[in-house]
Length: 79
Image (cartoon, rainbow, N blue to C red; front, side, top):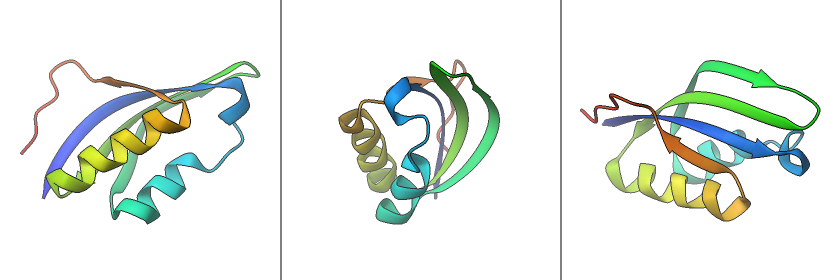
């Protein structure tokens, strides 16, 4: 199993959508929320994702396609 830490920045229209749940279910990735901040205009969540390397890549691509900005956490180590 690989791990990846990312910060997700959600645009206003996606704040109330269950995007993390859909990603986890669709790609068999386990999300662990490390930090979250949500306002009326933007949502920011730092996650640790765990799954196969292929699943992690597909999960990130899914988020980006939905319109979520995905940024790697500085010092991210895949083990």
